[in-house]
Image 1 (cartoon, rainbow, N blue to C red):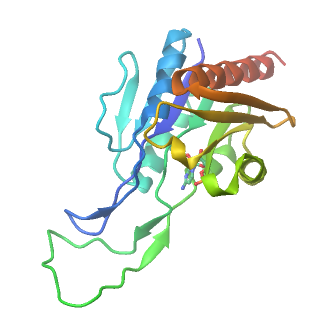
Image 2 (cartoon, helix red, strand yellow):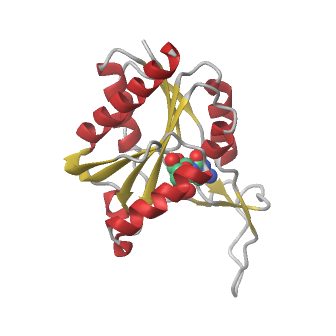
Length: 217
Ligand code: C5P
């Protein structure tokens, strides 16, 4: 049994106790990965940002709200895992300050100061040892798949990943999409217009195979 840690869903970066910055991630890809992991007989832990859907059964869920909370929960769970699959849509920035309560609306425009959030998967990959670390690269539809693969591969290098799953941003909220699994050894596996469940099972199987090869060496 392989222990698989998955980050999923969006993060919320609060301006005050009511307002926040976020994105439209549904968490579906992470749920599909966790379901595929459990179906294949593995242990799945989801570090999960705020989503509408109920998580799959048989999965340990660590609920979080902000990127900093996701980073802390993922770091704590990372030590006990064999594989990390980062499917979360982490907010790139957060407001520098968070106000208390709900400050009333003011006339005129308002400037927000945003500071960058940490790159969670890149930080963990730096200390991965023999663990397998896989990321997602959701790229602009306008760029097209060849450019998306190039960008995904650049992320694979920069973040020290073992593989990256490239897809186009029209995937958000949908059930099926084209996925390309770019392996660290240079292979690109194209999964044409498949259901997220099919893609998830493929990604989990590839991660487990890589882990078993490493663990045996
Ligand atoms: O946003 P970006 O395209 O760089 O995301 C690529 C990968 O990095 C995804 O796997 C995502 O979950 C992860 N990521 C992260 N922390 C961030 C930004 C992205 O773990 N702050």
